[in-house]
Amino acid sequence: MVVLACLAFVAGIGVAAGGDVARIVRSPFSFGANDFRGPGYEPVHVKIPAGSTGAAMARILMDADVVASVRAFTTAFAQHPGASGIQPGTYELRTRMRAADAVAHLARNERVEERVTVPEGFTAAQVLDRLESQTHLTREDLDAAVADPASIGLPEKAGGVVEGWLFPATYSIQPADTAAGVLSRMVAQTTAELDRLGVPAERRQSIITEASIIEREAPEGYRGKVARVIENRLAIGMPLGMDAIDAYGLGRPAHLITRAEFNDRSLPFASRVHVGLPPTPIGNPGVAAIEAAASPTQGDWLWFVTVDLHTGETQFTDNYAEFLEFRRQYQRWAAANGF
Image (tube, rainbow, N blue to C red; front, side, top):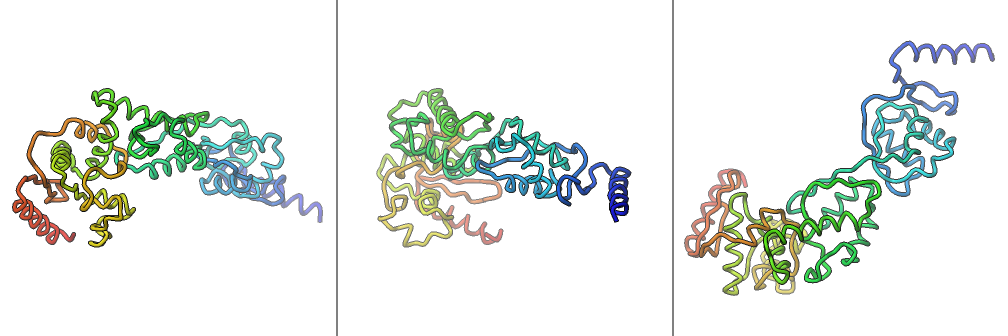
């Protein structure tokens, strides 16, 4: 019986060795667990979240095709003296690695630089979600940094609200970077843009708020004109009446907002009934929107309508009857195009 078992074991190894070196084999040290035998193939980035157990790491690595089985990894994890010191972060491993090699690589804590892109118009909540999902930063640390405005350099005029100040860009994040440090860089970049444009300190919060509306409302090529509509309405005490403001306040698309909600004075972001800017920015604007808010195009316009959503063609007017005609033009376009 012993001779037969040994022969079977040797035969099994011989088949694996004679074929693809990445084939799954039975590891004699893993109590029957499947394992890859090769050093690995394609590089792959894998994020290890804070507080991950060996089993949790194993499942992440299996999903990324790094290891062949949870059991092979957890066995190798238990046998490695440095496994308990594996730090959260992003690591570069290879597909189809031997489990012991994967553990050894992680135990060296050689995390890779993380790159995160924040698009124009993202809300603060979306920025934090992206940082949490794509970097080693935890939501707990991010929320703590946001709750301490001084730690991230947020200007006093922002009133402790980070919305609008997290500058959209691509950021390189190092393993040692903290949540407060990363958010500080975003706030500092917004401040740098305002400095470049010569925006005085007392106007910065209003400019950021206007820019956040422009970012959501203005098609490309029309930001300066939309900025002027906002300025003209503010100047005469006319409600801004822009759907993006209401949508931000209620947290749902404008087409799902009822007429009663649009006209509900108890809602602070009800832009059809409240005069002036909304209580906070409604997202994080990019350079073009900030530039438009700081230097609007000259004109007397009070209304605008995007009449073709495919091309972005937008009409502007200071005449209400003409505005109604533009709106009908859009409605005809929408009906013809299935909107």
